[in-house]
Image (cartoon, rainbow, N blue to C red):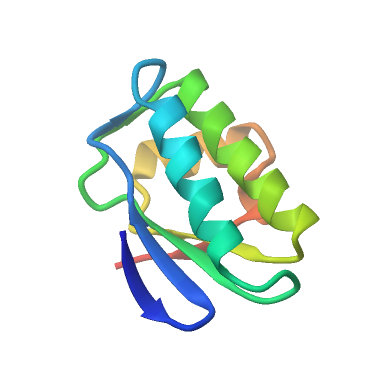
Length: 102
């Protein structure tokens, strides 16, 4: 994890965000959120190398987003795949995240 700004944290998502990787990802993401002051901050999740997200991975993203919302922070998805974008649209979750494309 790298710090990009006082109120921003960058977290790289695993190549496959799913059942086996969700717990570590969620733990790292929540820790990054808690490093920033409540009421400010953006967690940047870099999905450039993530080729697969299953329902468990989507659930992890939702839990991270919920925790950020409780802390009045934002979650930004950087370079999400077309598959993930479609999944977010299909589940009507797309509006909960900021999306930063290529």
